[in-house]
Structure formats: structure tokens, C-alpha cells
Image 1: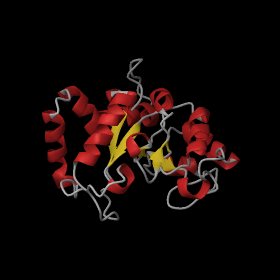
Image 2: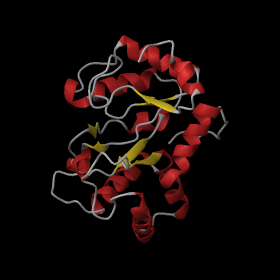
Image 3: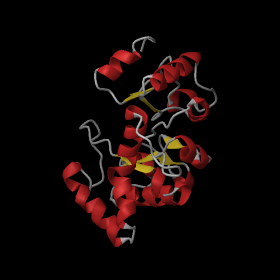
Length: 214
């Protein structure tokens, strides 16, 4: 994406821009393409500055771990990290480094992916793999820093059996309730945290200290 055009995307109604996705971009290295050894390219820093200037959320999903850490340190506003599993507890695929909790709490949050291949090395394709990732996130960063990154865009075919599309979401809510997760925490995970970040970053809405980020 050329620099100098960010303001136009904001005016068109965008809330966030990703630095990389299925392939490497000039702004960031993708996980599989870089193995996490190199920080964000200079253009990535430039784009982050421009996005923050016009109040767009910096989306760091799919970004290689070293590049991710570099971008988080460079960000001044909350950023998002909507879809990822964790290397802890034998997670695989495009996973997040286990050293990220403090970064998540200071400058953004983590979205629990629904794609089993990102969450487990086993053949388990049940809702349990999503719940276990949510449990892990709660232990690492707490309820104020979690959202959902479902990949309900029609492109991913291998969703958990009990979470095939958005119509199955009440099943996830029911499972969290049965696990004893407080209702207020479930509200945050299901969308409250994400909405708070959107309002803070995109609208400049003030929020109380300690409740700032996903």
C-alpha cells in the first residue's frame, strides 16, 4: 500500500489495516516467510505512523514474531492481533510467541482463532480446541485483553464441527457459561473489548485507565 493514501481509507470507513497476510508485504514479514528473525521494514514504521495519525487500528495478524515485537514497540496506540493460537500448550501453525503477554496488555490484545490447525497438533476438530485457547489467553493476559478472530469469511473450510459459522456462536457462549466464566467477562470476549478499542482508536473516545485495550 502506498504511503500518503491512508487518510483516504479512513474517510472511506476503514477501521484497520493489516501489515501482512498470506504473503510478505513491503511493510511486514509474514510468519512462514521470515521465521521471526527480522524486525519490521522501514515502510512498516511509516505506515504505522500514518495509520495512528488518522486513527486507524494497526492489524498485526499473520506477522512474523520478531517483526510483531518490533511493530508493537513502535506503536503508540492500541493495535489488534485478531487471529492466532499460542506456542504454549503445543499450539502449532501461525502461532504467537509465549513472551507476548506484557506487550498484549500494554498495546493491544489477542483474538482467539477458531481454525483447529492453528490451535492444536492433534486431529481434534471440536469446539474444545477453541475453548482451550480462550482458557490459555485468560491465564496469560486476562479478560480485558481477549477478543475473537473467527475467520467466518467463507474462505476457511475446516472450522470446528460446533462452530461452522456465526449461527453456531450461541454454543460457544453456552460452553463459556458452563465453565463458570463470569457473564461480564463473556461479554468482553464476545465483542465488548473489540468495540472499546475501536472507539478509543478510531473515535478518540476516552476510556478509564486499566481498561484501555483488548
